[in-house]
Amino acid sequence: MRKFQRSIRVALMGSLVMAGAALPAAAGPTPDETYQSPDAWLCRPGRADLCSAEQTVTIVAADGTRRTETMKPLADATIDCFYVYPTISTDPNGNSSLTAGPGERRAVEHQFAPFASVCRPFAPMYRQVTLAGLRSVMQGKPMPIDPQLALDDVRAAWRHYLANDNRGRGVVLVGHSQGSRMLVELLRRDIEGTPARKLLVSAVIPGFNFTVPAGADAGGTLKSIPLCRSATQTGCVIAYSTFRASAPPPQNSRYGRSSAPDVDVACVDPVSLSGIELRAFMPGVGNLLGQQPTLADWKQMATSAGTTFVEVPGMMKAGCVKDGLNSYLALSFNSAQRGVRPDNIPGDIVANGRVFDDWGLHLIDMNIVMGNLLETVRRQGAAFVGAKQ
Image (cartoon, rainbow, N blue to C red):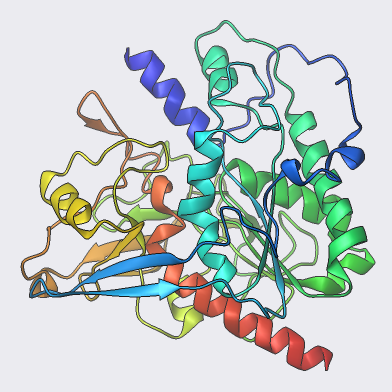
């Protein structure tokens, strides 16, 4: 049981295992032909889909009073967002199909649908390495998996978007975990050093060890695309991994820890970048895997709210911390501001009662600063459009 649960952890985190038998060449339409079908997209602007619905946040104050805030899709958005979801497919094979399942839909709801309030949303399906495929590798009985197939799909979807939808508009790349890994490869192969570089508003790629030379903003994972240092800077990267301040990345950490003193794992602080206080849009009920929260008081509060997201303003703060080889977004709690609200939030990876601190708060990398990311993208988009005009 423990081995199974550990393999699930590894799968979710998007550690793309390159072992395992390669898949034979896929039959049927080529990737470029695939994305001509509306069914190959989870979100596209101008239609009824996962990104066209309003997103509601219940904001719970320290004294228990509540109000709701609704994020509406922005019909006249001047920039686009292109999203690649994390490892989430529950398909039984090593690579997923191009048919959306509950995992893909939940990832869009938790991580991407709010972005429709600041940009036109594009979210392609792709034949990612599945939970089952990675679990089989972890159990020592690998089924055929093909990470290259996943990347080929993402690149084909990008080509289709450029050819049919972009029309010179600025675009924000949004991903997480395996999705961030896919977008880094897209940046390397299809954007950096090409005309498409001029279209890049920013790349939001948390849950991935994006590296730079120590003290530098560029020259590591990517040759020339730098880290973002202000909300009016464009053509840059927002990368970070979240850990509790009370449980920083351990020596065996999967994220937020460098392997050498002359290399930094990037941490771009979404809170300071946005210029506003921390706005954490926590999933109300059910995490990225669809599991119910084990914290009884949080579950009671979130269930009674009945909305996709819950916010507890003033109760938490987050900021980048650099400590030796560690560089991460540290989340801490302000007990004086707790009031009647729960004293903790869900987000840790837990199996058999054990918290796996080597993954930190990877499950909620996006949610813990969602409001800040939205504000940053809004300001970057305005700067991009202004400079273009």
